[in-house]
Image 1 (cartoon, rainbow, N blue to C red):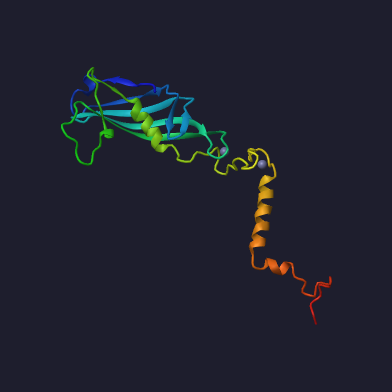
Image 2: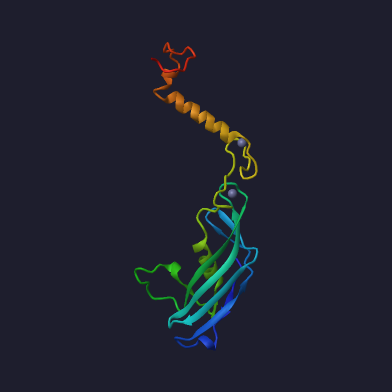
Length: 194
Ligand SMILES: [Zn+2]
Ligand SMILES: [Zn+2]
């Protein structure tokens, strides 16, 4: 992961001081569970840093064009993500954590008085990355029989499977026995009886 160091200087020396910070990070990608995502255009960020007394708060927006893999057809799936940044960098390790606070909620300001904003940017992207990734909403996926990409071709297996399912459905139906019966009227005359 690329780092995005920021050196805390006089502009943020007092509690309540704020500093806008916008720019671009050449991050190439990130992972979420089993999914890998690439960032061909990096990440754009537009933040405000605030000295909140006990630490530096980083809030604002990130935007990125994301390329992943379609969960259905395994072709590239592209989408834009806009996420809200919420990073917190404490000047000192707190003596004890509030009960509803876990360690993942903050980082520490480095001894050289810098913070690394890249983790907060990635987290903001991850929060807005869809759980199911599709190349398009109605992606038809891959044929379970031959693996053909059904967006590009119809291999015919889907129709065959459907016909087979239909045949099985009829066979399982209680009326299927009737279909085999000769009721005596099957003489080819469709006219209603008297
Ligand atoms: Zn797809
Ligand atoms: Zn097929």
